[in-house]
Length: 167
Picture (cartoon, one colour):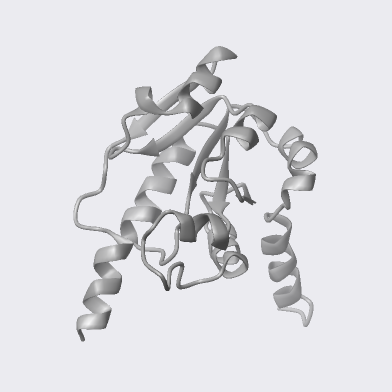
């Protein structure tokens, strides 16, 4: 291994992270079909990893949009959440083989981002009713699909944080 190998690996991770201002150009470079998912992904656990691997298997590329810290706080998961800031969450997400590109959204939902990049497939966890989501209507309007993947029972960041705090 050369002295530049570790830096190169870090550059590869950083390259998988795109600000929303560059997202359209970066998505245009990704192979299709393009799968899109979003979430806070605060404390990454097995349920997240399994879900993301399943999402990636549906297409050639997976874009993961993270709630910004402000957006995550508005979800009401607790006053100290997210535990990991948005830059750290993006870096961890970029390190996963399943993710092709990682970005953020500051709104309550990624509706504007979805309308901009037009993924072929929108994926959410099985705890969502896809027909109730405005994002589904946007994706289906241009011919895309919206799918709920089966929820991985027994894994929850909220439950994990509760367990850690209980000692």
